[in-house]
Length: 80
Image (cartoon, rainbow, N blue to C red; front, side, top):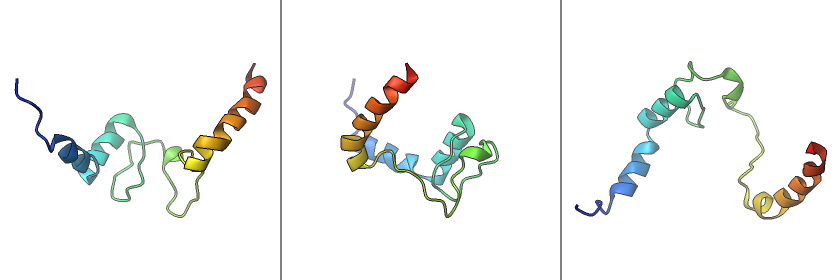
């Protein structure tokens, strides 16, 4: 067995960011990305980002490392 090509991961990531790959993901998983050159006709219109919309960034470092834990602690009793 030969070792993996040293640039295989880089090539895969570069391909995953192409229009062709994002189109395949949109078609197969029914999800939208922030690319504007993908045909979203097979995606639920309610999950397609609006061109000039502002959205909450749930991956924001300050939120993930600080606010999220406190928020979850407040929400958990409401779901019990």
